[in-house]
Length: 134
Image 1 (cartoon, rainbow, N blue to C red):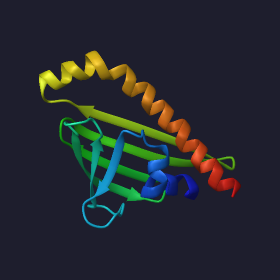
Image 2 (cartoon, one colour; image 1 turned 180 degrees about the vertical axis):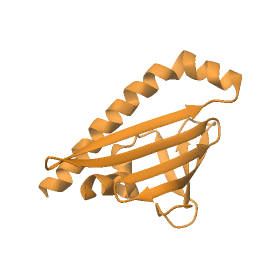
Image 3 (tube, helix red, strand yellow; image 1 turned 90 degrees about the vertical axis):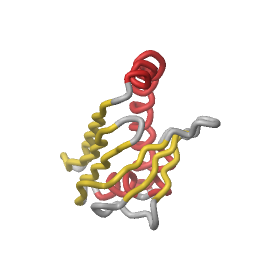
Image 4 (spheres, helix red, strand yellow; image 1 turned 120 degrees about the vertical axis):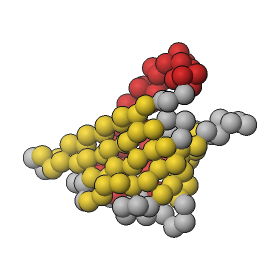
């Protein structure tokens, strides 16, 4: 469980499994302590939509980021030890307050986002397995 937690919270490891068009920049020094802040930036030329994030819950095996920007919500990552393995549950809940942005997301990005989040989980698993194997 500690390994998976590290892959989620270590910024250098995070960039190995995050979608390459996403960049996570800390506000100040990188940490995942409660109250720490960062910017998740989508690398779209000229636009670079940015989400402000704040860690609102944190303990070994649990990290919850709250987002504010073009959408509002939470990204919850929780690990559970099960039979010498780790079960990771990722819950991403959000609302898009702007109706135009909401329409654009539903029309153009919803399916891609779902597929991308599944691909991120596969990449995260690969990174954790590589660390475990040493």
